[in-house]
Amino acid sequence: MSEQPSTAPASQPWPEGVIARYLTAAGATVDLKADETKPHHIDSAECTGCGFQIGWGSEHYARQDAQTHAERCRALPKPEAQQ
Image (cartoon, rainbow, N blue to C red; front, side, top):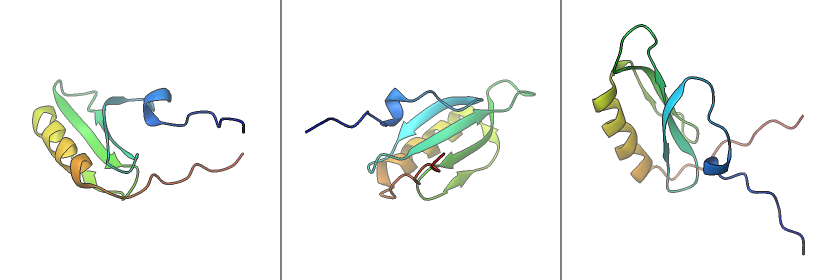
């Protein structure tokens, strides 16, 4: 039996602008993107499984919210489009 290549989030490059990534229980991620105009602020955060979003604000609080969501979310990652 041949092994499939790993598609785990840890082995994939992070999308542009992502400054932090939290792994959910089902293998999706919650990605935080920096606000380029304000230090220590995030522009957005989104779960790649269920679509949960955190709006702009303090990086400290966004990290806490992202971690809390990642610990509880059971949504599977959305499949990537075939090319």
